Image 1 (cartoon, rainbow, N blue to C red):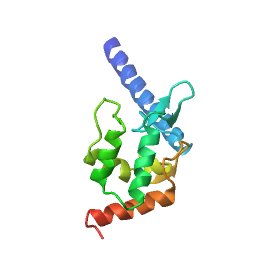
Image 2: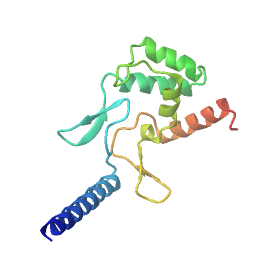
Image 3: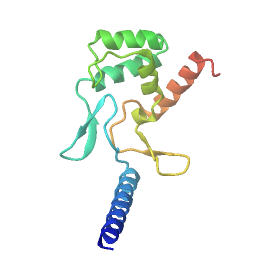
Image 4: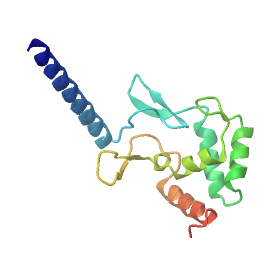
Length: 151
């Protein structure tokens, strides 16, 4: 009987802990905070518990995104430029077309975060510094759609 009670207490404790963590994550998202590791171009400031620009990669990626928006270069050329400037991912790899397109499609770079706990996973305004404006992000989506034959 004692083992049963200990097992029930452990299950209750784990369930309560899981619910508390989810609630803290929901609260952080509601305040515009990033959950987990910062994406490429940003870094976690663990002291202040915020996401800040990575001084090495943020300016390179920001320049790349704005260069793409000029309409004079395709994604492959942008990747070449980024790598020529010495860009490396957090794991030390060079940029590739697939990952550059993921960055270009990621609304985080326009200052949004995804509320993964809400139905439909809506975008919320984040407190991190955007790499491009919301208008630039929308223009980038349209340009990518044209390149990918979606328009």
